[in-house]
Length: 252
Image 1 (spheres, rainbow, N blue to C red):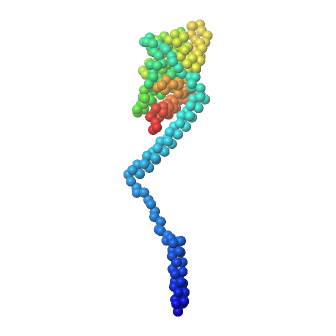
Image 2: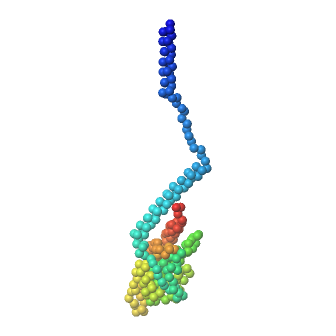
Image 3: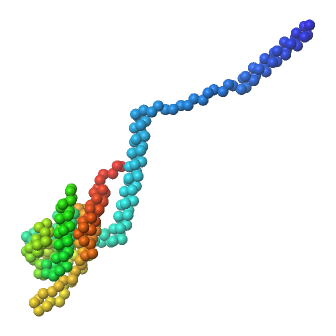
């Protein structure tokens, strides 16, 4: 009887031990917890800051790309070789220097007062462009210039009267042969006086171009005879917008 009892006790002990080992070997699974950070004004501000930073970076990259394109166009046109300092004389005999116009946009035309047709046509077109500009809201300061390539006949007084026939805004400039030659050389303007006739009259062959110069004194664009007043004005507006955008402070 005792032997049978001992055997049963041993069986129960083994069963209990096996059950305990299984429970220890395989721990019960715990439910997973999903942790989600609470949305706060601080986190929203951080997200907005990152977003604005990315937007600013994209605008910066776009600006750099546009400036690179403008530099390439400037290189192709040879803009670095056009424009420069000059010193001339106005209708009152006062010395006028190129630096006196810094801060203003310039439209410059080189011609001579005895020109029979081309110069009058171009100056009428130039005057029309100036009127369009003056009637444009918030238009920046603009100074149109007429520079004579005939210093032998075009005295300050004659140039002054000639310019007033086209626009009271048109400033006429002349000077000595050396002064005129230096100004023409700066803008790559060709001029050459032809042979005199029996009345000592002659025609001056010259480059027929209207030059656009920005407020920093840098050459920006040019317009030939094939461009009408509206086309020139539209091009000016584009160049003015580009200049103003480039002058705005960066986000960085």
